[in-house]
Amino acid sequence: MLDAARSRFAAFGYDGATIRAIAADAGVDSALVHHFYGTKEQLFSEAVGLPAVPSEMLATVMDVGLAELGDSIVRSLLRLWDTGDTAAKIAAVMLGRVE
Image 1 (spheres, one colour):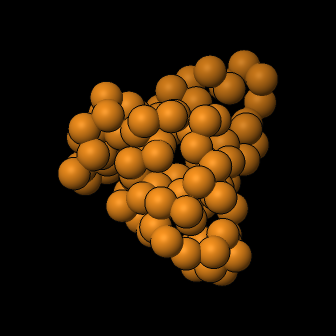
Image 2 (cartoon, rainbow, N blue to C red):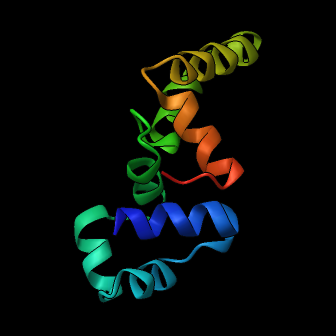
């Protein structure tokens, strides 16, 4: 399922990839994808190898005052980018070079 998800996200982007299409590519029912990975966002995070689900990370980032918001967002994204091989995984998916 993760290989199918990586391929779909690379080929169609996040918005263009659907759970149903990923499930069909993997030869399983979409309910099975939901069972193991939950939401599309959680599946994307797992497929790309992100250390956190983006919406959960943003919820933490947004818990600052307005004056610090921009700085908080940039620092969080840079920390995420620098975590392990996350940058390479995100770049591979965005460029369509799925491993």
